[in-house]
Image 1 (cartoon, helix red, strand yellow):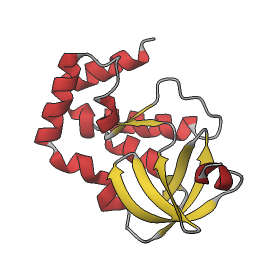
Image 2: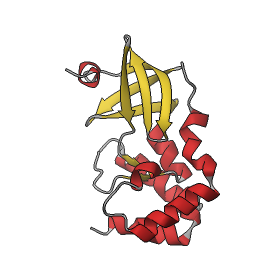
Image 3: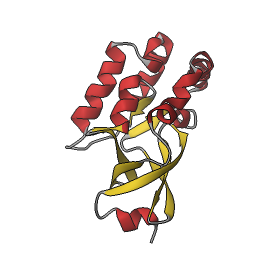
Image 4: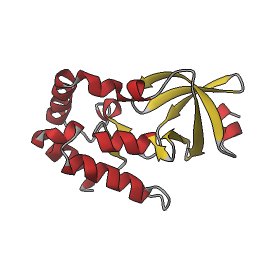
Length: 159
């Protein structure tokens, strides 16, 4: 039984150990460490690995990273190592409450450094996450500053 399976039964407090990417964190609970993928989103770094993203979109994304290097460190700036965070587990992912009742997924979506998973459906979180992503689009934050990237990323949602 994995660490996530053990703690998935209830909300937990985890101690943040590191932040490898915006959408991944490593936590410690009861002396066990585990990787936590943010619930319901695709981090931009993972987007580069997706098959449905064509090569020109990947190149545009790489240009975005070069022009906006701090975008890759959004979570590192926001979260504090060795601090405890409230975490809930859902569908083998983590819901990390980063600012009170606001989840890290919402903050990443709102800043335009993550995308809502195209197949995401969740009665409790869909509205929050959709509003956060729409806010980034409307205010042209993160990847939504670039019309080329907006069009590329829009292709994810056409199926």
